[in-house]
Amino acid sequence: MKKAIINVAIYDFERYIKSGFVVFDQQIASVGEMKDFVDDHYLIIDGTGSLLMPGLVCAHTHIYSTFARGLSLPFNPKNFQEILDQMWWKLDREIDNETSYYSGIVAASDFLKNGVTTIIDHHASGKEIKGSLASLKKAVCDEAYMRAIFAFEVSDRFPVAEAIAENVDFIKNFRTPFTAGLFGLHASMSLSEATLASVEENLGNSPIHIHVAESAMDEEDALKRYQKRVVARLDDHGLINPNSLLVHCVHVDDEELAIIKKRNGRIVVNVTSNMNNAVGLPDIKAFMSKGIKVMIGNDGLSSGIANEYLNTYYGSHLLRRSPTAFSLDDLRAMIDNAYDYASGLLGIKLGRILPNYEADMLLIPYQPPTKMDGGNAFGHIFFGLLHAFKPSAVYVAGKELVHDYELSDRHLSAEYAKATAISDRLWQRIKGE
Image (cartoon, rainbow, N blue to C red):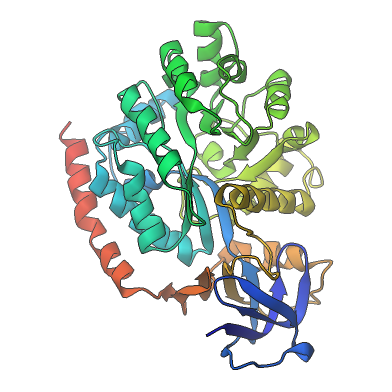
């Protein structure tokens, strides 16, 4: 039976309807104003007092970071490399497939409750590489019913052949409207020439997903060891296929941006993580001025994306020392870029409340205190909702996954409850090194 959400305000980053309806099953069948609604024996959901939006996309995250929450380790880094050494590399080298699965359960559950219905993940698990992406897919896509795109971080820290094979196998064997693969690489500073040559031999036409110039140390390492900057080094190996994701790009220069544009790569910024790691802020307007499509991720720092929209906007003002240097239209373009990218990889249509788009939707209670229309709707969302963004209902492919702010699936909640024991074992392994 098709469902109909009625008496609801609708906004999809392009069009606003003050009082409308949406009829849907797995996809949206029809949309319109309430005056035109005809009930054809639908399951009726009353959206009075709520806003209906498309589910959100997080364009770069690290699900494996989920079990870092509350972890206490000796930590006194003086630079970015020491952050990796003292925290993240201690964590990821002890992750096995069971840990990957349960971190996926937790991350997906929390993402859904925060209105994120599609994620692009960058995985690392030193204890078990083979099958790690399938473990994530089982948790995130099969159990939680989210959409997700996965990649394994090839790095000299791990057996390179195994990491390459994990990417190749997942890309080849898992492509549906719910999941797809990218070819993951960690960062230039952890990738030797021999490793990049091996990647080049196995990459084919797949886009890569790699950290680029997150810290100045990445560029300094490339210049010292290879006499070229990071993006040029990747390009010399022919690795920047169309739609490759180059993440962070805080310290790239104009020549590197020209290469990214020429190769039709995309940049994913993670402003909150950059601020937390004190590595600088990406110059998003410079990226845009070169015609590069830019998207927004959270780098695994949280289980949402709304806060990243805020910090991207405010951080860009701070970087340029101007409250008008980066506009809400710029931010909206980045959000649209993520919908476009995920839609292309998954072979579906995301990001609009229109017929034939996937019924990935959010219901958020909102009573506008001032006039709301098509001209200022995104301003209402930015200043009125994103600071405390919690949808009351979340749908993916028409299935209600969050109801009254809580997960609808009891089995998923039961799996979530097992995560503490799994994380305890992980912490014991880390502290027993």
